Image 1 (cartoon, helix red, strand yellow):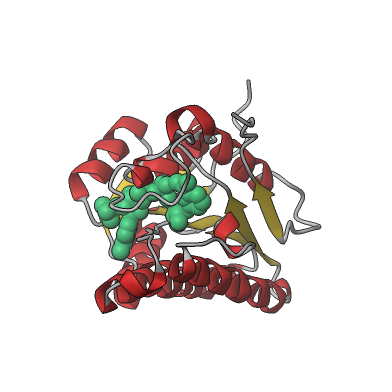
Image 2 (cartoon, helix red, strand yellow; image 1 turned 90 degrees about the vertical axis):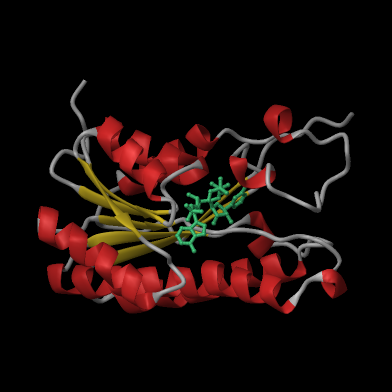
Length: 242
Ligand SMILES: NC(=O)c1ccc[n+]([C@@H]2O[C@H](COP(=O)([O-])OP(=O)(O)OC[C@H]3O[C@@H](n4cnc5c(N)ncnc54)[C@H](OP(=O)(O)O)[C@@H]3O)[C@@H](O)[C@H]2O)c1
């Protein structure tokens, strides 16, 4: 079957594990060249080797400079940037008054400022190119009010607010911007949790969406006509009552 993204360059933050890794594998399978960013270099180096047509750039999205270096690396290697997926993110859940100042800072710096830095770095290139798609990975927590997710939810509401406005500004330059708001995904995200925000009967491995399913939906957005934009994708798992 013909690969649909040959000649396209896709940059993904948080590409070492979880959804970011699934996105990298899916876009690579369609022939795209990949630029992979995350802090843990062995993970992205190994993934770049596995994918073949890919480079890995150590990136901490909390740093604007790192996000610009990531996009600069894409331009140096491939001379264009077609899709930027700002995926890196994390959650520290719990009753709001139990969160430390550092917990709050790390979520805001990673989830909000990381998306803003990555979006601006990509937009500067895409604006000059007069084409491109920026996909910001938000969450269903950015659409609802979920107990014990106050700060995480606030970061994802912020991502949706920023993304919606960037979409309107970017349209003048033929650049498309989409916010993706998934419910639970079965990734390593859930393994490091000190506080699990769901009832015990919910099991991520059994009940949540697979990262490959979300990656497929993001790919579908990237394959759409240049004549229209998908402002937002919301997708949630079907969790049967138990
Ligand atoms: N899993 C879910 O149920 C779910 C649901 C809705 C939305 N989301 C969102 O989906 C995105 C991906 O989550 P996931 O489930 O795939 O999480 P994950 O399995 O924990 O993977 C997170 C990735 O982000 C990277 N990352 C974290 N902080 C970073 C930083 N400062 N700079 C660069 N990279 C960083 C991590 O790599 P390093 O640690 O090596 O940097 C890792 O590769 C997040 O934005 C999350 O909020 C997840």
